[in-house]
Image (spheres, rainbow, N blue to C red):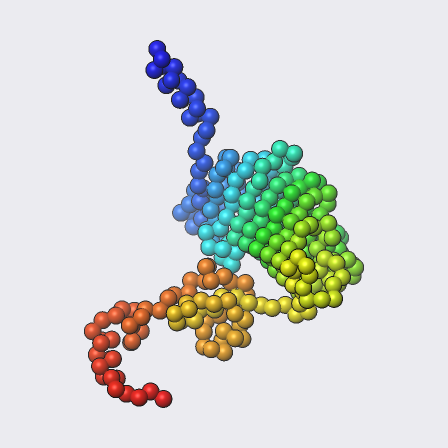
Length: 310
C-alpha cells in the first residue's frame, strides 16, 4: 500500500513540473515552425525559441505579438546581422502585451527594423533585450521610434544598438509610466523632429556604460563633455567598429573599417562581433594555403631553405 501511495505522489509531482522545450524556427521548413509568431503561440513556460537566419515579415498589425504572461526566451541562432524582423514601414515588428503578473521574456540577438510607428512596443510587460538591434523605426506623430515602453512595463536593454530611429520626441526610447534600464549599448544617429529634448527619455534610469553619438538634438540630457560619471561616452561623430578577420594568429579583432582594410584584412561590417563573424583561424604550417599540412609544404620549405627575405 505504501509503495502505491509513493508512486501516485511521484506521478503527481511529474505532472506538475513539465520540462521546458526548445522550439526551432526555420524559414526553409527544417524547424518546428516557419514563422516566429507560430512558435510564440506554441510556447509554454520556460521554453526557448531559437530562430534561424532570414528576414521575417507579416501582413498583420505586428510581425510578432507576445500576449502571454509566461516566461520564455526568444533568440536567434546566428545573431542580429542574420535574423531580422522587418516592419516594412507598415507595422510594428515586435509588441509585448501583458499584465501585472507577467514574467520576464528574454529576447536575444535579433534585429527589429523599419517599424511604424515603433520597432518594439511593450504594454504592461517585463522584457530583457540583449544584443538586439533596433533600427529605422519612425513615429512622426509621437515618440519612441526605437522602443516605446508603456503602462508599467519593466524593460532592460543590454548590449544593444539603437540607431537611425526618428520621432517627434524621444526617438530612440520613450517611457510611459514604465521602468527602463539601458546598459552597455550603442545609441546613434537618432533624430527628434520636434527639435527638443533627448532622443532617450530622461526617465530612463539607470543608463550606464553606453555610447551616444550624432543624436539630435542630444542623447538624454544636454552634455558638453565626452564622458560622465556613469561610464557613458558621447561623440560628435559615431565610431563604427566591427569585426575584422586578420588571417593570422589573432584571427579576429574589433577595429574601424579603414584600419582593417589598411592592413589587408577582411572587414565584416559595422557592429559585427568576433563571436559571430566566422573568421577562420590560420592553419599553421600550411605554406601553400591548400588547407592541409602535407609533403608539399615540407618541399616548399626545403626549396626556400637558406633564402634571405627582404
